[in-house]
Length: 463
Image 1: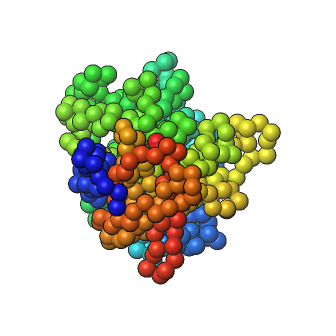
Image 2: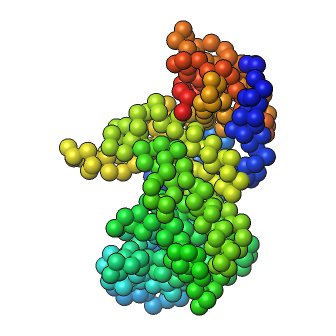
Image 3: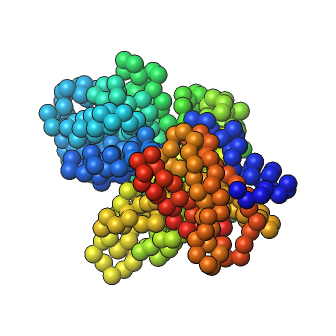
């Protein structure tokens, strides 16, 4: 093993091996693969693949419009919308099969109950997102919880409610409108889920916020304050009661995937500025809006890669940025969940305009055609290499490992890959070490599984 110089010991202690002591001890990796998991043809194979990576939790968006009755009608159905058995026979089939598949593998399922909703439940009765009825949403949430609640104990209310694609209006006469709409939806959904038999023990997450804001999107921390009835200085409106909130869900995407990016707008929260969200939640608790020490769930995250050259980074950088982001989340004791969004990139659209052609997400571990990207093995063997003066400090993990295992670290300084050291991971497959920096050095992990197969991570440069 490389000799640790005395001044390096404290750096390794901070960045690597003892991180488990300062990290959230029960931090979980969540995986989201919407196209595959909502497909009867692909679901089981995808769950098998995800589970082989050591992932035990998957997230799915349950769209109100897709699991209800008469979604295109302007008139509400005439039956008890809280009763799942009163809905048409084919309403729940896809959701039931997802729950059953996850159950059969012993995997945890997080469900996000979100819009767009049926036309009859929204104010304009045509778009599914404009001022959805909290009363009707609560009835539907009750039906979903009654239907699958025995197999689900982690929920969140609405996806990216600070984004105009999911909730409208975001602003009214220049003032944020979506936070107040969301608060009503959250209260109705939380009460519904906790109100079904056995549901009081379930966790319901608040937020699911997008990371940025502008004239069309409400900034996440502005959204948080307004939804919790707090002023810009975190003074609480006494007319608003304290909310029950088991955690705050957030999508901490960063611009161009850069893990250390911090927006000059202090109301935005990317992976590199998670401290802003921690402080905001603590101030909200001090104001009496929520309980203390509310955990953070990073329920959607990924690093965009080429072929999207506007928002993405080269494929070889995707695992480098993802590992650095995961490390940031790992050492933050308030973060209870990190995540990977997409197994496979979204299909490109038929357009010569890059903005339109790659208007989806290229955050997958596979290309849109199914070919593995460097990020695939990078997800299983994440490695962060940090610069520290004349030294390199390495943090990494073996994703499928749950017990300590031996891993080999290789380095290439221009003369090919050579063994740097073999080290033993801690619990959860995490390890850390330091070594003298070498110009142009690249590092990677090699690990031989119990079945004899050897996995090799992608080359990682210091970042």
